[in-house]
Image 1: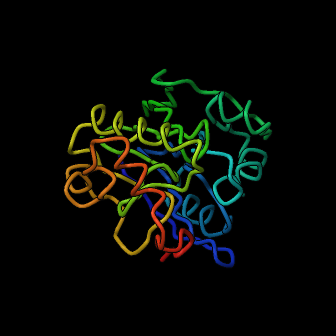
Image 2 (image 1 turned 90 degrees about the horizontal axis):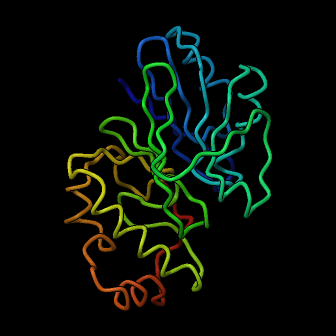
Length: 217
């Protein structure tokens, strides 16, 4: 299994989307902004797209989902909670559920629902890899409102317990660090993963003079 990272952008939005491929089978995660770049890579490497995984419903993560779904006639997967709460629609859309395995050819995918950034945000575990969208970054965690802090805290705590420390983390954005670092790195370098107490997590998350949440690199 291999992971191809695409750095794509539209104005201020700088995203990292991914192609997971094994043999000829390919699955995209949060495709956005540059159809030709992604499609040309698949064509050059003779990879057949079999599905699209969406971590959440924000536009910069779903921008090309419908395009790939229609042109490649493949299913698009998103958590049932996200579909319901944000009234999301897309051609060939199929709901996924917490820890219910999804099999696409030889790829076994486990959706891990991690509310906080949105109510149905989902991380996808594929072998030793985890694709985290805007839930977890190498440097921090995703934006959330005051009412969602408890959910985000609970998601981070579950993340720490559930995933092996060798899990490779592939987030939807970078603030300067390279994607693909393991969870063990986050446990000792990402402050949100180093805080165990909920009140301290909440205070740190909502502190004044936090870095610009859109200062993507």
